[in-house]
Length: 448
Length: 174
Image 1 (cartoon, one colour):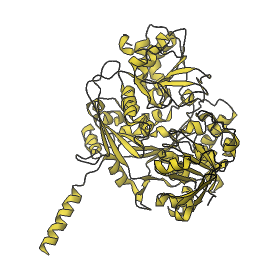
Image 2 (cartoon, one colour):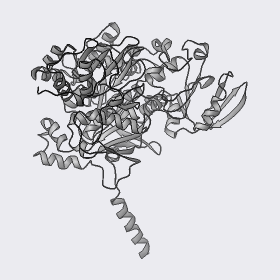
Image 3 (cartoon, helix red, strand yellow):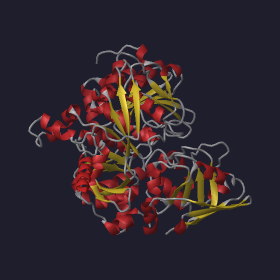
C-alpha cells in the first residue's frame, strides 16, 4: 500500500512536469471536443475572411437557412484578392462580402480604400495575439504564427463551420524546431532564410506539423521579418509557423494591449507563459547557420527548388514584382528603395510594386519611398494580392518570367505559361536595375 | 453518402498543386458547376491532355505523394466533385486538401508507395476501382487482373463521410 501511493506520487510529479510546445499549449487551452482519439476540435479566437473563399460559404449558409455568425466581433473581413473589382464576377464577390458584413453587424470590414492584403492588414490592426487560434480560407494564414498564435489555412467548409460555430478540427500537431543562428550577412534577409528552410525540409517535409522558428536571428528580427518566415511555412507543407512572443511582439502590439497590462514587462511575462517548455518534444530539429548564407532564388516550379544566387545571377527576366503577404510590408519597401534610390530600372524589364496595405502605402509615400519607385520607373499599384496568383495588376504572358517577392512559383501561378523566380525585395530591386537576376551584395544601398 | 468508385485516371507525378488542379483565375466563380470544364487545365505532365476521354470518364484518381499542395482552395475538391470524381488515392496528401476532401464527404485515401506502384501497374489497361467503404477495402480491376487492398482512414474522417460532410457533423454536434 505504501509502495503504491509512492508510485502514484511519482506519476503525479511526472504529469506536473509534462512539457509542451507552444502549439500544444494552444491546443490544450482551446480544446472544445475530441470526437475521436487524435482529432482535436478547437475553439477559434479569430475567423478571417476574404472575398475569394468566403462567398461560397456565405451562400451555403443562406441556402441551409443558417445565415448567422457565431460572434461578429471575432470575424474580420477584407476585400483584397482583386481590389478594386476587375469585372462583374469579382464585383459580385465584393458585393456578397459587403452585404454579409452589414447584415451580420461585422464591424471590422475593410473595403477598398481602407484595405490591404489579408495577412498584412489583420496583424497591423492588432487582431492577432499570442496564444490565439486563427483560421482563414487562405493557405498563407500560417503568417500569423509570428505572434505566437496557432494560425492555419483552411478550406471553405472549415471556414463555414468557423463562421457558424466558432470551431475547427485539427489533428494533434507535431512541431519541427528550426534554430536559426549566426550573423546575418549584408544583403541576406528573412526571405532567403525561409527559402533555405523550405529547400532543406522539401515541399512536404512539414505536412501536419507546426514549424517553430527559434534562435538568435529570429530573436533579433522585426515582426515583419518573422511574418515573412512564418508566411512560407505552408510551402513546406506546414500547418502553421510559430515564433515565441517576446519584447518585439509586445512593442508591436502595445498600442492595442496597453490598457490590458500595467506595463510592457507585465505583458511580456504574460506572453511568456505560451513559450515552448524546456525539454518539450520536437519531431525534428533543424539547425541553420546563416553566417555564410547567400541570397536565395528559386529556379523551378516548386518552392523547394532553390539555389544560391551565385548560380542564378544573369538569368533574364521580363517583370519584377514587389508585394504580397510575404514581402509587401514597409520594411520590404524600404530595403528595395535603398537599392533603387537614384537608379533607373533596365529598359529590358518592367517593375510593379504593390504596398501590402493602404497604411503601408501612405507610410511609403510619407517616407519618399513611393517617389523613389516612381522615379526608377516602377508602376506603383494599390494594395492587392493581384498578380501573385495571376488575378490582376501584373499578370504574365505565356513564356514570360517574373522575379517576384511572392511565395509560390507553381506553373502558371502569375499567368498561364509564365514562370516565377521567388526572391527577396533586395534581389528584386537590383534585378530591376540590371534587367536580369543580380546579387544585392554587389550593389550599394543609399540612405532613404 | 456519395457514390465512390469507377474508372481510374492515373496522374503519375508527385506534388501536384491546387493551381494545377484548378487555376486561380477561376476562383472568381461562385458556383461549383462553373468550374467543371477547367479541371486539371494547367496540370504539367508530358503527354497529359485535360480534354482526353480518360479524364472525362474518370471517377477515381490515383497519384503519388503530396497531392493537393499549395493553396487552401476548396475549388480543388469541388472541381473533382462536379466531374463525378469522389475518390483520390495517393501515397500522401497536403493537409488542407485532405481535410477539404473529407469535409465535402469525399475520400482521400492514403496507401504506402508499394501498393501505389501496384495500382500504377494497371495504367493503360482500362482500370476501375471499387470501394468497400464499410470494410476499408478497395479493389482494382483491369485487363491485367484484379487485386484488393486494405486501407485506413481516420475515424473522424470516416464519420465526416458518413455524415455527408463537416457542416452536417458540426451542426449536429456543436
